[in-house]
Length: 262
Image 1 (cartoon, rainbow, N blue to C red):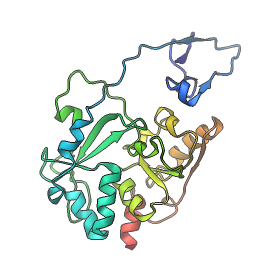
Image 2: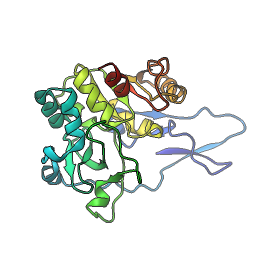
Image 3: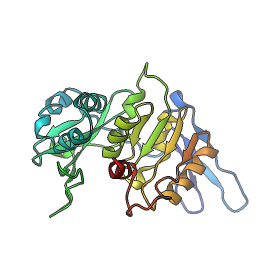
């Protein structure tokens, strides 16, 4: 549930309101009233998210000899560690594009929100962007209609019931989350999937964890401002300047830094 401004009819910022997971996380924040703005409480129209049947994953968690991303990982890590990463993140393979990878978005209740299909170069590990960006969604590939997409953090399932409570590190790229989990397995590594996807709704399930953000090069200011807002609202969250302070290309991230030194 959210607050709206009666003067403009617009919803206030998403930090104000009640989370639909309130029974689990207890999040609620009301705005500060003032003479100019009178706000009222309104429940928006809510379309429940669509989930993909869990049986689908088994059809795609195979054929790793033809998965470009997995082939790239094997160039830099042991087969044992790569197998562990495949199992931890349910890395999938699809022939939607030859050698393409599926990054499943699975929440803390093990519900499958969707899967992101991406194509990487098996030698460089970089995304294939020519002649077009090779990115798609599994609910579109599977032609599930109608489908209400509600994304979650990639790797959110790592905190499912009974999981050990570790510090959570959040990056933008799913590829980077997996690579860094191989380098620093003592943390939970998760990804937003895009620089604009660092949202309170996606982070509420991990509110009770210690969180460290690792934004891509040039995104520190934006993510740090969001971290400051989340910190004021009960999150234990910090934003790292590591990538911003190092001479890497615009858009570079932790995986680029690690691979450059490795």
